[in-house]
Image (cartoon, rainbow, N blue to C red; front, side, top):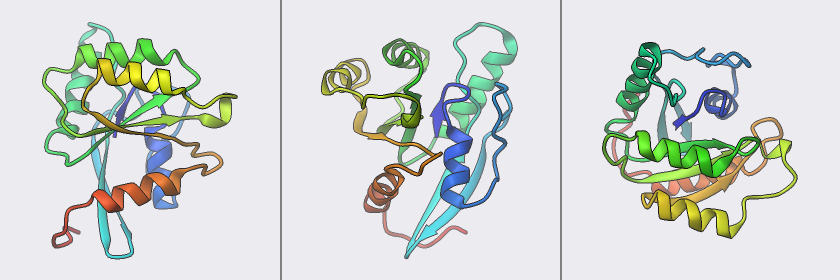
Length: 168
């Protein structure tokens, strides 16, 4: 799970797990290391990696936090890139894409905080994002506050999961 600080990464983890594992606060840079957490839906085991927020600055601490976030994403079967709908979306996506050292592979964009905005992302916006970020395969719009559409995200994650033995 990747995204800017306060995009809702830890909030999503907490909502999915059903308890507060990740720290949720308005203060940026609260998550400083990536960590794994696991949930089961029926016979499907899903291991999430919560990562620090991606910063677009050249300060040394921010560079190290970005390295930690990308280290957490390495080897993932699927990357969920969380984008806060209450912030300028296209600017963020472009900066995020520019900050990638190599391609992430399969990526889904999860628009968060839909409870704070009046409109869903338009098809034109999604098409523009795919031009900038061709790895993006799917889009979801969710709210961890209301639980809106999270079932659609988890359903597609389960459908995408590769068969195998449980790790945890």
